[in-house]
Image (cartoon, rainbow, N blue to C red):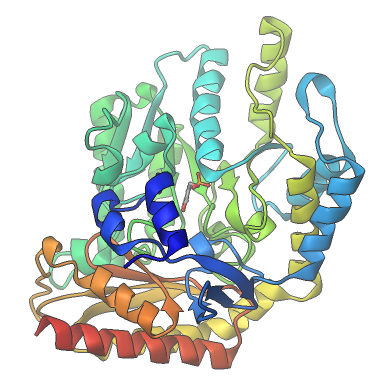
Length: 453
Ligand code: PLP
């Protein structure tokens, strides 16, 4: 029997990424408040938020300074915009700060409100740039299967997951996908991580040559894949990929929507994985998820081209009402101030070995095939047979069941395609809370094993 709130939910809300017919039966988990790394449901039950919401609430749930930053900006100037040369000090200050932090040459910052919009902007700018340079054929975008870049039409075209393409008439023409860099699933028996990386780079090169290098504009990659399964690239992957991209003048877009702002123990994921992108997309933890904000870095060459295009075409024909929303910028300024002052990112790096030890120990569990991560993110894969790596039938819903058991144990984690379970707690998690998280996850795995066998 669903509660009153649950009934109202089922009757009124179209839920993103939800099994819509099952939802009518199971109803929602309605959360009411949060504190530190915990969230509480309407019955007052606490859960460790082992996913930082959707990989975003890096500073946890009750940060009074972020709330105050939003309140003050709301009272001072709740809205203005950046169209037609209008500006405001939170956007200017945040852009200056981000320019300093970016690990890539950055002339400007473009703001939007989500990761999808950031990546959509990347595609549009890659096209606009090549038109300006007189290379109108150079428009194709290469992404990876299982990559996740969002849901707008261009972003979903780059996303490499069947659910984002089936019956959505996507991907659009001109969007290609190469292999997922997942050693556990993709490597040949006995193939080292380095050889596997070289093979993936060769596949990318063959793809570019087959399509024609003068038709390929950009390659997009998350440093660590998130929604595709919390998958770490094999050793040497990005240097190998990058050598190919620079041979054919293909831009590298780092989708740092999850990895940006400390997730891997560095400010950006690119720094942890020897990735040297031309541009970075960011969102989520830039405000610790408290208000929507996304954006991209604009490299000096692109900036120059954009200015030149204005001379030729007039105004820059791109931007949204909320590009550089003052409240979002004020919260981001405060979040970055806290990351710096409280050494949150250094702290994440210090806690990472403990987190990763607890995670990789789960690889010994009867039903876990792989358990691996970096910094404070990781994924595990549930398998039916550890030796052969055989998986359960997808319709058995084993990872979903594990996540449901975890919820009963007071832990929120997320199941992803391929019976993977992702863990991505707030960066402020303490060592004791890390232990509690993994104790609960272990109990959920035990219960899943007993349920399936
Ligand atoms: N890129 C990555 C790596 C993401 O994980 C996400 C969302 O999870 C997106 C892009 C899309 O961001 P949004 O949901 O804010 O549109």
